[in-house]
Each structure stands twice: as structure tokens, then as C-alpha cells.
Image (cartoon, rainbow, N blue to C red; front, side):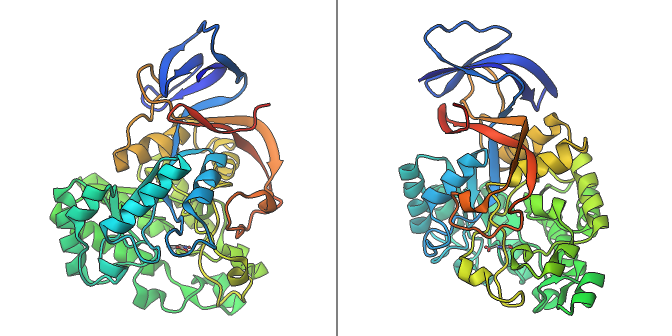
Length: 425
Ligand code: DOR
């Protein structure tokens, strides 16, 4: 198929420019990006007033397959990703069995092929995700793992993490760290602070995250490995990462939409859909996360899409599992809170959602230029709609944003030259 995307505002994260241009897509590639492209045999898509971004990459989601297909499958998760405006995803290895060996990585890749959507598996850093012994990293890399992580749990043993980093570095792979000192987080269910005291819920202190961020940065400095910090949630973590970057430590970091949009005060309704790990923090943490995005301390925005079964989330707050189903709300949430408000420009948005995650994971084609693969995310900033959880494609309906009216929805997702989602008539 040949598509001519007409009159959209093309966002270039490298030249830092937004220009009204036509984009021609043929045979999976971008073949022309110019002011007026003539292509009589192409299907014309009028994108006047819309932004055309390089294809967004969600570098942190949980697709639950194998093992927890009642929560999500690779097919439903990737369809949700496409509807959410993502052209590729990287999925975490806390499946059942965990993705700590080539057989599971191969299974994920086979299912992704069936779903016809780019899925980049993240292999477990340690065998069984138990933090005791490094996985067969060479085996995981050969099978196609793009990073290593025990996400959902930290590696408590520093010596084990050191070895994982040393091996990962030999293969040029990032180690994605879930920073949580589990002795400090204990049985906490929300941020430790005024809100947890008022609600009588057990708290997770900021230090539970920051102690591990500091340790992991020291180990990254020692080994020279590429450390990527997942779901940064506190002002202290932002400051530690900022200082490490200044010293030249090879570190990158991500933040989730929910940590940017909600404070721990949201817990006062006792809605278990706001129960996430790390927990929602305070207004001053959010301000620090904004600052971190602005000055480049935080490189990427990632969903941490964590679908759960309704019967699990319907349990009382203390017992419900951690996680938000985030693929289908990430873009309008960030658009409404950060782009509409001028905190991030469309160019910075393209860097955080497409270019930087692509760079971190080594995925090509995150720019809109002739000759590159056609991965494109189209957003209509004028489109204002309520979130409707019952219309989620994801099997995970655990979202605290149901009914919230947001603007800046994705209207078209093109991955490898194919339209995977379109609101266009
Ligand atoms: O809220 C979360 N849910 N945080 C994590 O780190 C893991 C995730 C999950 O897998 O449910």
C-alpha cells in the first residue's frame, strides 16, 4: 500500500523542528517528506491540524504472556498499544515462567509475529527473577532480548547486580533497574507521608527507591555498564541521576504518565486502581520529575502498563496487586498535563516517547526522513474525549482515569508502513 499523509505538522526530534509537510509511505518505507508531494496512485490521508511524530516506543510494558493470559496476551496488548499510539513495545520478563531463558524469549517473538506487531522482549537479569544468580545472558541476547531486567522486583544482592552489569556491558545491553529496597518498602502499599498517616495505610518511603538508585549508579560507574532506571518517582532519585550524568555515568531514566499526573492524595478514595509500585508521590516530587524531563535527566516516558484481573483489583486496597493498565491513556494524559500546559514542547515529547527510547534499546527508524522505515504516530491536539475503560482493548481494565476528559488523542498508528490503528473515516 502507498499512503500520502497530507498537510500534517511533522515533528523532527533531531533538528528540533515542527514543519507542515507531506509524507509519502510506500512498501514499509518513508519515500518522500516535502512541502507538496504528488502521488496520484497513493491513498491520501488528510492530516491538517494533526502532528505527525516518529513512531512512539513504549519501552516498559507487561504483556503477561506466557502464563497470565487472563490479564493480557501479546495479541491484546499489542492491539491496545497500537490504539494507544505506540508503534513498538518492549515487554518485561515477569511472566510465568519468567523470560530468563531463550525458550521464553522465542515464544514471545513468535506470538508477536502472529500479532504482526514489533515486540522487543526484555530478558530477566537473574534466573527465576530471584536475584541470586545471573541468567544465561549470551543465550538471551542470541534469542533477541534487547535489555535485562527483573522488573517488578529489585536485585537486592549487590554482587549479583555487579556481575549482571559486567556481562550486560559485554553485549552492549542496558540493565533496567527496578529500584526498591524491599527491607525499606516492607509491606507498604502507598507513599509514606502525610496522606498515608491520615489514611492509616502503611507507607513506602522515598528512601526505598533512592537507596537503590544511589547503589545502582555506583555500580554502573564501577562497571561502565549502561544502567536504565525504570519508573523514577521521587525528587531525590531525579537529583541522584542528574549528578551521576554530570559525572559521566552511563545512565538513562524513564518516568510513567501516572507518576507525572497523580499525587498520593489520589489514594484517599481507596481506589485500588491507583495502587502502583513505586507508589504515587507528592506534588513536589512531580515538580522535580517535570524538571528532570525538561533538563534531560529523564530521557523517556514509558507506560509500565500493568494489566490485572478485575477480581484482583476489586479486593481491598491492602490486598490488591500493584499496577495500572496504561497503554491506552498514556498519550492524552501526557499531552493534557505536559504538552498543553507548555511544560514539554511537541519536539521534546517526540524525544521522550520515540527517539530516546529507540536509542536506549537500539531500535532504528525513529525519525521522519526519506529512506527510513515508516513508523509514525499521528496525534490530533484538538480531539477531546473521555477515557472509556469499557472500550479498552487491553484485558486490563484497571485504570483510575475512567471518565476523565482529555485532549491530544492518537488518531493513527503506522508501524513498518502498515496502518495498525486509525480513527480516520
Ligand atoms: O505497579 C507495578 N506493577 N509495578 C511494577 O514494578 C510491576 C507491575 C506489574 O507487573 O504488575
